Length: 116
Image 1 (cartoon, rainbow, N blue to C red):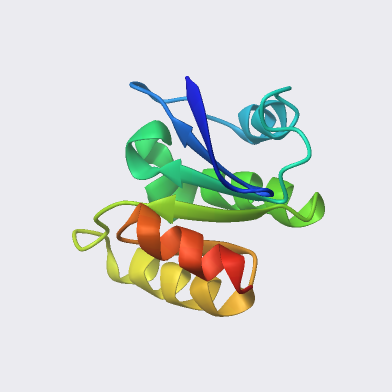
Image 2 (image 1 turned 90 degrees about the vertical axis):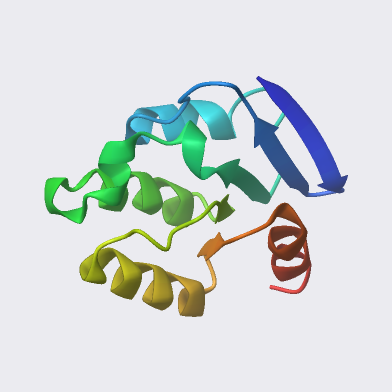
């Protein structure tokens, strides 16, 4: 796992495999010494368990709640065009909320997190 700092408080996590399977993994990531103190984190879709994107199992809610509770903004970068209607609705509402964003590029994630 590699951490790229885009701005003083924005950390992008780059990894070759899935690193977030559970809410506990999200907490562990937030308290990773390389990230600790970052108020905004960018993750790539490929680094989050595919089960996250199946809203019926509650995994997304558990993971998202960790970021909201600890006041860490999260931008998830990837192609979400193949998601279900309920996932599309969830992403649209999340993007309005100010804590969790779903975007198509790192550049967009950085800009969004800079100003929110």
